[in-house]
Image 1 (cartoon, rainbow, N blue to C red):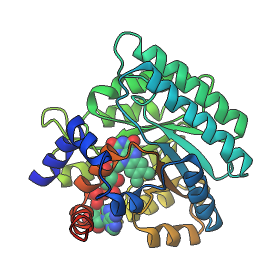
Image 2: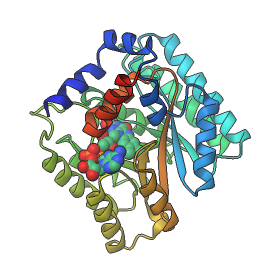
Image 3: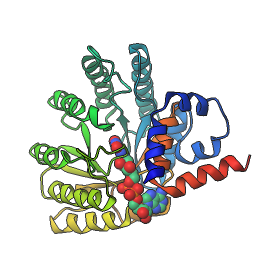
Image 4: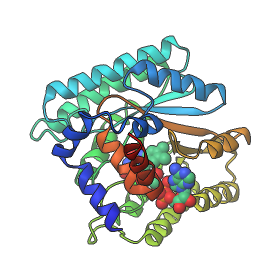
Length: 310
Ligand code: FAD
C-alpha cells in the first residue's frame, strides 16, 4: 500500500519524469510495456496481435499537456496514426485510446473547448478510417469534465467509448447513467490513480466488489461492456455474467495491457472471445510506466532488476 502510494506520487513528479526520460536505465522496462517510440512501432504491434486474432486500442503516450501546441502535436500524432492504420489495413482490429489531458482538457479556461475540438478531429479521422475511439479516464478531478466531453461528442459519434473506474464511489451512479444510452461502449477498469479516502475505495476488496456491481449493471444493459482487467477472478465473473445475461462472445470484450498476461490474452482470443490489447507508444512513457509498477509489485521488481543489471 505504501509502495503503491509512493509510486503513484512519483508518477506525478515532473522532476522524476525529466530524470527518467534522460536516462537509458529504464529501457528494458519500457520495452516490455511500451510498443516503441513511433507510430510505426504501434502499427507493427497491432499487426502482430491481429495475426493472433487479438484486437487493439492504441494510445499515443502523453498526458497533462501544459501548452496548446503540445495538445496540437498529440492530436496530429493521432491523425497520422489513424492514417497509417488505415494504410496497413488494420482498422478492423485496431482503434485508438485518447487521454483527455493529452489533447488539452486541463489547460484551464479554454482547455475543455480545445480538448473537444481536438477530440472531434480525432473522431472524424477515426470514422473516415472505419474505426473507433475510446476516451481514457484519468485522475479524479478530470472525471466530470471527461464525461461531459464524451457526452458532447456522442451525438455525432455514438461509438465513442468512455472509461469508468471502479475505485471511485461516484462510478456506480455513472454506470447507471451511461447504461441508459443503448450501444454505449464502456470500458470498466479498477482505476490506476491514487484514491482519496473520502471519494474512493482504498481497500482492494472494496474496489473489486464495486467492480463486480458495475460490471453486473453493464452486462444487464444494452451497453457494450469492455472488461479491462488482468484479474483472473474478475475475468471469470465477467464470463459468467455475460452468459447469465445472454451475451455471446461478440456482445462484449475483454481488455488487457500490452505486455501483461500475453498467454491469457491468447487463450481468450482462441476461445473466440473479443480480446483487445491496449498498446501505448511514444517518448512520454514515464507516468504510464510508473502507474504499471504501482499496480503490481512484480512489475516494480522487474524494473529494479533491469536497473541493477546495468
Ligand atoms: P490488479 O488488482 O492489478 O491485479 C489483480 C490480479 O490480477 C493480480 O493479483 C494477479 O493475479 C493478476 N494480474 C494483474 N496483472 C498481472 C500481470 N501483469 N501478469 C499476471 N497477472 C496479473 N486505468 C485508469 O484509471 N484509466 C483508464 O483509462 C485505464 N484504461 C485501461 C485500459 C486497459 C485495457 C486496462 C487493462 C487497464 C486500464 N487501466 C486504466 C488500468 C486499470 O485501472 C488498473 O490499474 C490495471 O488494469 C490493474 O488492475 P487489474 O484489474 O488488472 O487488477
